Length: 116
Ligand SMILES: [Zn+2]
Image 1: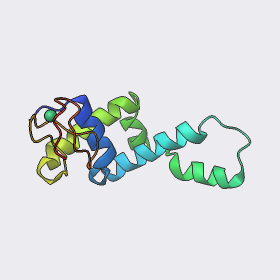
Image 2 (image 1 turned 180 degrees about the vertical axis):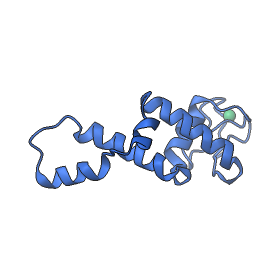
Image 3 (image 1 turned 30 degrees about the vertical axis):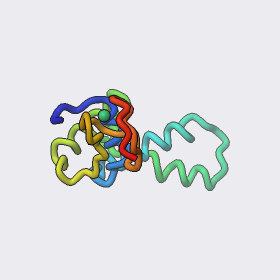
Image 4 (image 1 turned 60 degrees about the vertical axis):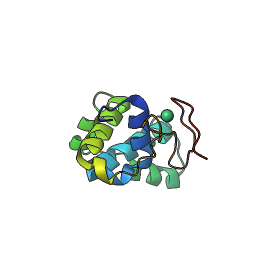
């Protein structure tokens, strides 16, 4: 399977994040910070500190997110797949070779093959 598809993008995004670049890591943190605390006012000082550790002002980070987090996810997962395909710990179905839901899953969501 050389084609990338949504389930594989999700898996790489979730389980192969050690292959993210520093900028991509900052973009992910920025997104978390915005979702959690971006629009909240009257935050406790500890939360402000936490928020400011997540939210980035680096324009290279913000550029990665300019078309939204979904597009960032597709772009970064595609890059990781292209550059590190042979190093990734992909849990592929023994039958149809598509990606399982998690690294420990033993049943295929596509063909329903079970390798328990
Ligand atoms: Zn399968």
